[in-house]
Amino acid sequence: MSLAPTDHRTIVTVDVADFSNPSRRAAHMSDLHDGLYGVLRRAFNGAGVDFDTCETEDRGDGALILVPGTFPKSELADKLPGRLVAEIRRYNSTRVDAAKIKLRVAVHSGDIRRNTHGWIGLPVILAFRILDAQEAKQALRRPGSVLAIIASDHFFSEVISEDPGNDPESYRRIEVTIKTFTGHAWLRLHGEDAVVSRRPPPAEDELGVLPLAAEDEFKELHAWLVAVETPHLSMLVRRAIGAGMPVPRFASVWDAFLYVSDLNAGPDGIPPAVLFVELVANEVGGDIGAHLTDWVDQSVRKLRRTSVLDQQRETRPPIQFEPHLHLLFAIELDSIDSDRCLLSFWRQDDPLEWPPPRGGVRELGIADLEYKVDEVIIAAESAWSGLAASVTLEFLLARPLLQLPIYTWRKEHSSGDPRPLILDYTLALRSLERMQAKFWHRAWRVRWDSMVENPTLSRIHPIGGAQTGENALDTVLVDSRWIGLVMDEPPPARPSPRAAPEALTAALRAGLPVIMWHPTARPEDLHALVGRLAGGQGGVLDLPEQRRAAHLSADAGDLVRDLVLIWDDPNRTVVLDQPSSDPAGQ
Image 1 (cartoon, helix red, strand yellow):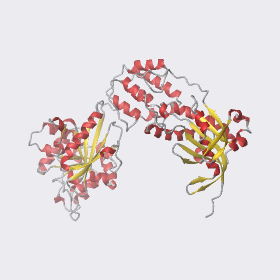
Image 2 (spheres, rainbow, N blue to C red):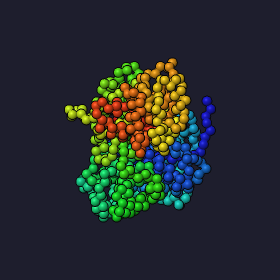
Image 3 (cartoon, helix red, strand yellow):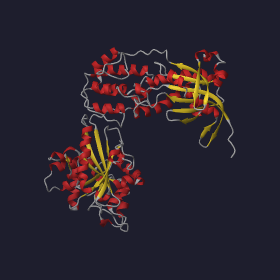
Image 4 (tube, rainbow, N blue to C red):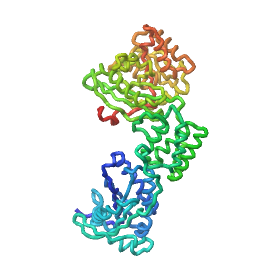
């Protein structure tokens, strides 16, 4: 087998110092890994090297970077260290200690080859050997140091020492003995003389994180935030820190600020504490809002993130005056045992967040569904305890389960005095069959948008039964005027493949988001009931709330109690086979 031709490259190897320190949690390591590549990209680009033209290989806690041989080595030696120091400091300024970066960077050059598994050659091996120099590791532990540059003897003598602009006197020779390599290299430590202005270490009962402002600024900030009250506090925190993190209940806005101050910035470089204050300022307005906005502007200016915040301000949607949340349950039948099913759920904690992470997945008997749903609702209510928001429970059901008596289900069974769900929530049934059939989704979205624009009762088709004849209903529902269907009889649990298309399938295919039926009512009584529920000013859009209101005030024999309403919003689709965020519930 012939060898690939050699390619001359400047070889840069990188290692995050103390990457596996026990003080670093998994979240810190993930943040470090992402942050490393952000630092490297900005530093190389700032030094004049297009990072995307370099060959890179990830090494977990470091990287191999091969700079094209056409880029001058002397220019790289001159510019790259300074840009790395600047980007490391900028990155660290928004991180707690456990997530800060210090780097060892080795530089060498030589002829190497690429094989099917990556780049090989003695120059690559040597670059990684000197990167592990024990003296370099020890030197980087000094306070204030952020970067150790280790140059091979070849690179130092051929490149660095030939140009006074590279400050060769700042390098010192070190001995290196690693595995089979014994030799020497040249070390320069960056940042050890840096003096960073910080307030004194806080007491245990104070804010134990990297400060975002001087002490007097914190006092002013405290005075403003303790005067603020908002019913949306938990929602503001969640928007500041992003989805996927638990949000406890806070006694005050200041307590919430202290909580988010312990969290690192995301890819945009804006710390969650700064973003939280920005959201609070928008919420309260007035003089306090103006003071808080000034504080935010000063903070992002120090971090050089003003343009990022300006862009966010242009696109950030406001907090809804009356926010509304959804808790969606998906219930799939077991493929073997028809008495068992798979229950999963998606809990929305922010009205603008969809889809949220998938919750736990449980396999259980259908007879136990109501009780397991109760457990999920109780857990959700605990998470929502700090929110002022209304809630809709949605049930994404397989066709054979559309007859489940969900409108009679209750919660808080463990109390001994269970409470009907419909007292506290709007309930909505949805079609699992349609969710799984993506080839029906385009028509579904078109009909939904049309309904929102014109929700008049006359757009509900009044007839949907077997007497319409083969394919007749399919043909009728093609007309774009229809947004809903009242079926004259309940749909079969499992339609025969040899029978003519029945009403439910026709409605789902046509994209109708509203479908209704009743197990016993005569067609004329059912149509009159629908007219009563959807005949108001809001038309069809009022159906879920009107059905709930009518149910709450109905006598025992009122038809509305058994009215089945599919209310299917295509804006809340989910991926049914996505991983669960609760592995314990699998």
